[in-house]
Image (tube, rainbow over all chains, first blue to last red; front, side, top):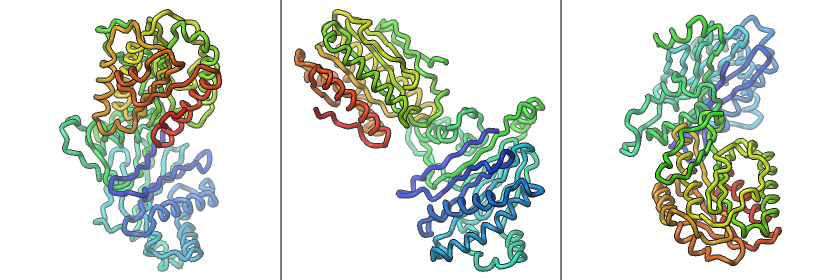
Length: 262
Length: 233
């Protein structure tokens, strides 16, 4: 399994990158990945995205996903505990709602089964084995922080989960990407010095196989998009791309057929 | 290890093989490329041991530093001939050097600088094309004036001028000429080749150590996102 990650500040953000990327091995079997996009009109949103990521990671560490039946159950339980912890931290640090505004996309991976579950709160982008999901919320993400005071019981939590959270089960990971919405903000500079036959940035980053074995693949592709083709991303970008490079999978032809269909 | 596509040097007939490290095998997204153009004419015999010592201390310390994985070094030795001792290689693969092995009688300074510079620029372009951002530092260490180059110094200058015209290169490319001793008109060489900085120093072991110390600091400074230091001795 190859894990590529990228975190880059956008052109429109002068001081801070408000996105955050999380990649953490919980055990031999499980890993947690996440991308978080702090709200630009919130307060010190780089803090919100990093704080939420670390709280969520800690909850999964305490819970030990190996003790759950499947990744979905572990993810749901970690989110419940994460909400409790976030409320507690908010109270302890006297934080306001607009200091906790960050989107959340988390992906719990079972590395043995090569399966997993994704949970998305707010906007962003997910690509599952070639199937792309642009989570669009008209630039007004449905942040978790809005609901902290409303989730007081397990029933509240279940109701919030069904109404405000998107969940994806992935029985077999072939090539999966989770990203903040910054991935949609590439703009091409109108300058004849740049090469004209430019790739489509989204495809280049999440489908193209160039440098797939290189751990800096995403960062270098971003550099190529900028220096060779004049593309810059206006918003911050946080991307995790997970590629299953199991020889068995390649032997079965699954990867080539996926790209042919994709 | 694979070699990159070599630039066309047919017109210069340097018979060189740079064997630069393949950009696609690099596992960082930014490199510091340091080029050493080192005079090995007979006149350097008096301080060559100090230079060997200081240079090898430099590679030792860089090999264990936090920037080891992004520092690439190329070494050009010259007297009447120009010898590419090493194309750009990661600093951990740079061996202990002995510059006394190729001592010769003449000083082809301009040819050597042109060779090192041209390779640095070609490699820089290859790296950029594969998504690696690059900062380049060219260090020239000589104690004499040119007396045998086939190329005029203006050929070096035109390469540097062309590079500087592009805004993105302004802070990512530095050239320093270290003039050792007082036997040559280093200012003229600096001006004719368009080299950014000139540092004139003595040939004592202490001063050579100081020069190499400055080079280390300069590389660390560039690595930290600052500009290369201006040499003051």
